[in-house]
Image (cartoon, rainbow, N blue to C red):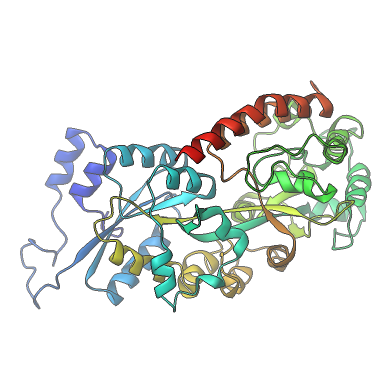
Length: 451
């Protein structure tokens, strides 16, 4: 608590600690030199304004946040930072609960998928007045593909800190054993299919597959990676019309399904479940979807050599999915100007470089900060391919601006599960997605138009 500057009262309000926990905290002595602590003399105290934050970092990353917070407060002695850490799974439910009770902190972490509904619900506030007047912040230095996640009715409601695309990851050890060249920018989807089949060995005591089988999918980061190379998409730009009932979409989905059920060069879900860490992290997959945010986990846990290559070019174009997260100032902030002072330092080039780039935690949403991530100890050797994708062919994955996103995702994911298990076919899956999903989009659009 001391490193994170969490006040007792704010912590109790926002996390709902039990009476026993409250009594324990009340008994904790204040740090030496703190207001009210014995022996805390010295110069007259600077009047401070508190900026509170709701974040999602795990224990291993909290010290990095604490280090930044300490440096910020040294530079800004009139601001005191308070942090509450939620788990990722809890945060997206806790924030609306805080909002309903009017107990939101000044700043909250917001996943790209939550920005639109939270803006609609009034949880976040527009930031344009700050980005327009703070010329040193340079919002134009942030990739447009990442900013589009956080715009609502023409206003920017959050600032991204990371945005990552999917690339083609590969197990170097399996390629070396097969005597094959690593993937490169010349690969097409047909190359992927050919090499995945060559790298598959189901006769071994522990089978090896050429491809992980993560595609097909339609939503999340895998959507463009599944479809857009064939010149098709899941949704239109307004996200009120499904576009996948096309020959191009059927061809794309059939390609990925055949890798699993015809070529058998990708495992079925049941086959994957036989591996505690999954067959990719377990070293039994040659090729996999690797978004930039998964590279820290690979650096920590993979017991094989690995790297990344560009996503293969499709029959029509090269395209891959991308997504990210950011931070919003909330409707309950009593000190939005001070909160912006924190955000402007946290999310400028230096802040992104220190917190996420140099630590290897995530690929920054600013191009000017990207080299710090590529040069970090845990980034893959060819991390520059992520930068090239963001510059040229990464597509922000839909849905992200419809109030029906969660329900549509459930509908789509049920059909994806059946496709991967072999219990349905592309024509049937697409027909059901349209039949069940379009009414959801229609209702969400009507609700949005009604305000």
